[in-house]
Image (cartoon, rainbow, N blue to C red; front, side):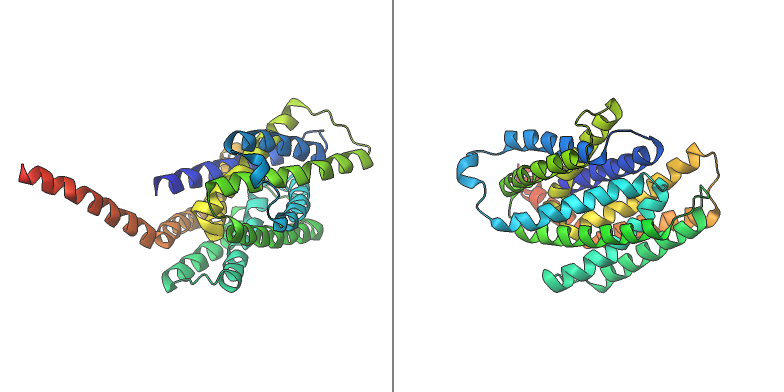
Length: 298
């Protein structure tokens, strides 16, 4: 439970930081160059966690499919977030929640209790209302950005469910991520070369690459420990965090309705994970009971 909580926290922090910085900071580094270096960073990190690479690598061809989906999704994501506010972007990403649940139900045969379905419904409705109520900036979201955001939602949901299905353990995560990097790097090099872009990055671009690389690793760990739906729930917490930060940055007081929606989202996330929390509390009690009996016997 503690490892899941830590992954939730770090992924939420990464997603919120990425959304805010990419929206606020205007960097001149080409998108494909940023993504190229993020893959190189991930490749180096994964090499430290994989033993006996030669016997484990390229044992599954199915990793090629999510590789190209991730490339398309990442390019779309970086373009969209640089054109709209962080809150608008994170709000549009809430569509991942129902999309991931539907895909998980049909492809992974994952059943959802009424409690979980009700929690997901509340989170989604509140997220939509925050989008309506918030309006920290008066920025117009064009049809192109909405269309690209929907495409990102679909690709992200497919990749999340697909990878959850093929990940079978911690070592499997690192080797599959290593393969994703090996396939992705040549594609980004070709894209940078064909677009006559530069391979030189700014300091800000390098920061984005590091954040993107950490996000890729955290997403893989969250898929293993929390599942595709659990990973998507993080974006709901990010919505609350990003919106609060933008209110502070733009010196605007959130409305009472918005604060109410924040509270419902956080409460719904705890309600969604209620059975998991109860399960870990029960296991913790059982593990401590022999020690208590031993002490009482003394």
